[in-house]
Structures are given as structure tokens and as C-alpha cells.
Image (cartoon, rainbow, N blue to C red):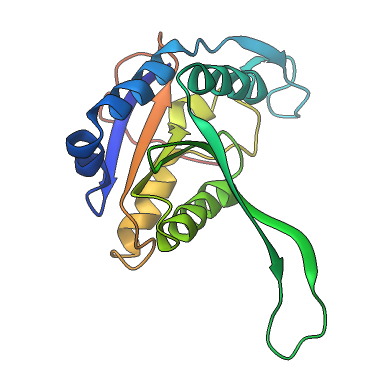
Length: 194
């Protein structure tokens, strides 16, 4: 995989580069190590029979790449109790896939709500002083169009964060948009989404 765009929210990219250059290099190495392959035959009506990139296979490769470099899951378990409500919900937790030296990384190849929920999880661990910043690795629109429907894309996430005008999330974040290695260079274009 290759990086096609980086976005810095509240100085996330700068903090990563200045305070954790070795971790920035590891994140880049993990991205470069993943080799996406078209292994999924689409059964979807509008893509029937087309070979698509399989997000599950890519996720497995990312997990291996990060684990090989000592990145580990961070999980906080708790009981949900809300005021004036008699129910207690046990077994609840917040979890981030990759953490090292208080730098959190999520690779999100799923639906849009999952991308946005990752930002809330970064905020949660930041507020608990368990994180300095978060890094969200997401597909660019060009890659998303070659995957199963329902997968979101990073341009939408960056667009929405820009419109929130620094109000959410209140944690430094770096967003990295990725595409396959053999993707053509980005050219100025207007892409119409259906």
C-alpha cells in the first residue's frame, strides 16, 4: 500500500514527526508492507463478478505488520451506569487496535461510522492521559471504489473534520489516506459519488 494524502488535525502529524519520529517511520513501514490483492469476487448487484480488494485480508496483513513491530491493542473495560437508571451493563470496553508509547493507530477499512467512532475512541484515551495522539489509516476514494460497497473513504472524514472547525475531536490526530501500490498518481479531478 502507499500513502496518497496526509491530514493533520490539531498538530497530530507534527507531534508524531517531532516527538515520535521512530513510530512515524514504523507506521509508514507497516503501510508499505501490506500488499493488497484482488481476491474477493463481488456478489453485489452493481459489481457482480468483479474482482475486488478484500478488506479482511488487508486488515490481517496490517495486524501482522504492526504486531511484528511491537504494537499492541489497548483496551479499557468498565461497567456502564447512568444517572437515575437502575441497569448496570457489565463487560463494556473501549479498544484501539494498535498502541505504542501512547501513540494510537486504527486502520479502518469499514463503514463510515467506524471511522468517526475511532475519533471518539482517540478522544476517550486522550482524556484518560493514555494517549498523546491518534493516527487513522483509511482508504482513499480511489481504493474504496475497488472494494465492497459500504466501505467508506478518507476524503469524507477529512471533509467532515474540517467543517467541525476544531470542535471535535479535541485530540491531535493524523489521518493517512492509502491506495494500492500500482494506483496511478492523483490528478485533479471531480469524482461523482452515487
